[in-house]
Image 1 (tube, rainbow, N blue to C red):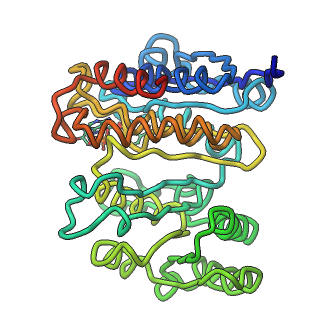
Image 2 (spheres, rainbow, N blue to C red):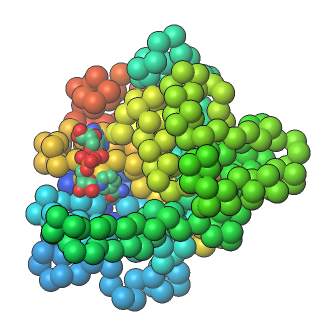
Length: 356
Ligand SMILES: NC(=O)c1ccc[n+]([C@@H]2O[C@H](COP(=O)([O-])OP(=O)(O)OC[C@H]3O[C@@H](n4cnc5c(N)ncnc54)[C@H](O)[C@@H]3O)[C@@H](O)[C@H]2O)c1
């Protein structure tokens, strides 16, 4: 009998709203793909989210980061955010806390069109929309440095610092080049706003100019972010890998999600190569549809597929993506993609397909 590799230890945080609906479905398909490939999974669920926060004040427990580093290979997260917590404190502390404290510096967001009928762009085929946004995930305007002066008065001042370190900029640009090289992609575009942000983004421009010399086989280009967004809509086929800062990556990847069928279908990985990393759908907790059983579980399922790839389970990743592609091709979708299946019906279909 072939020797079995040790089980991969996965932390599952369903979170809030539709996160709690899509995550069980994603896990179902993950288990089906793993079992088909003879892989072992050890799943541990954590109940962190708004209910727990409102009950006992827990957000991210103080020992969580050490525990994840020690006891887990990867984390799967549903979504966080709840109208009962208007300042979203629990969500910020859990999600941003994990991103920052686990130093998950690379946010990988595929914008890959599975079926031309899903894009709102005219006359675009699958091959025309196939790019990845690599977003810096630990710095920039999300570093949380700033403050208020004279808050609530007519003279109020609010500041938000944009943090760009040489180490941070260099490692994300290198990540993008290595990502392209690993996948045999030929084009990397770095996007900033160095014409207006003359210090922080000047650093991006200089680091990019240095690093591109190490990757001469890759066509390296630069676009200001305003032009980049215009070009993504006008002709997305120009792009294969886009690397950019935290804020611009957040925006560009949602635009990309809009081009491939919407938020219900978009996965993402928050990655530190070689260390425990976190995978999640791009969407939030969707309070407008939560509790109705109609949320699309494909984004969460594809996030589980990205996690498999990260864990070195390439065949299982392919199997999961294949199940999602087949569902779209056969019209087995939730209402956001024009179908009539419930979250659970689609989850069952995807799991059965992944097991077949
Ligand atoms: N990573 C995260 O956990 C994350 C990301 C974004 C927003 N949020 C939080 O989620 C809450 C709601 O935010 P929002 O409304 O701006 O964004 P959202 O992503 O929750 O919803 C935006 C729109 O997309 C739709 N949508 C989202 N997920 C869907 C799915 N799986 N299937 C079908 N349709 C789906 C929603 O119905 C809504 O119309 C807020 O509290 C926000 O802070 C969390």
